[in-house]
Length: 227
Image (cartoon, rainbow, N blue to C red; front, top):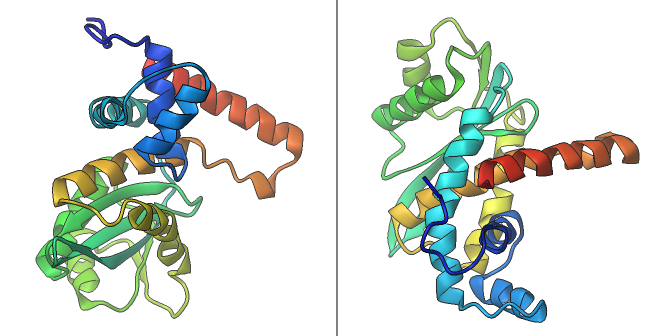
């Protein structure tokens, strides 16, 4: 089946617009202008619909080809206000900084923690060797009932990696003038995480040539996902 059937614009333009939106802090209007500068006239509404439809598709494909996460999960939750109501954005990253999962929930009690841990186990395929959290008691409940054999570290500052990982999506949230609904937020955050993982190359940790090779490999994986 042709993924792009009945779309007026060619696949490389559609995938490029979607990549710009999830890779950089750009609005649909910004991307409209960037494409217009290249002589491509497309409305911001069309770009928005591309990002919704194809962002989810690309995410599924990227996850199917993902080679797996590390054995240590750093887990944290932050407040997110949507339409005046407070929600909690749960996030887990591994020791390499890759986002294992993000999940928006209305609560942060033991039941919510267990739901999130079950998602992590499904994504990872097995119990992590170690989890690192703050001292929220909900984590202790989920740890005891679901992954009691994993090490649970709640030391002060040990969870900085997870706390800092929220910053990128906080920046996007401000640029979008807050999320409009829980469905929209979950959809955006899931795709943003998948794209960020692919291009999370640790540029400051490797030599320039190695970085260029890693970037070339990332673009190759991206091109396969959008084909």
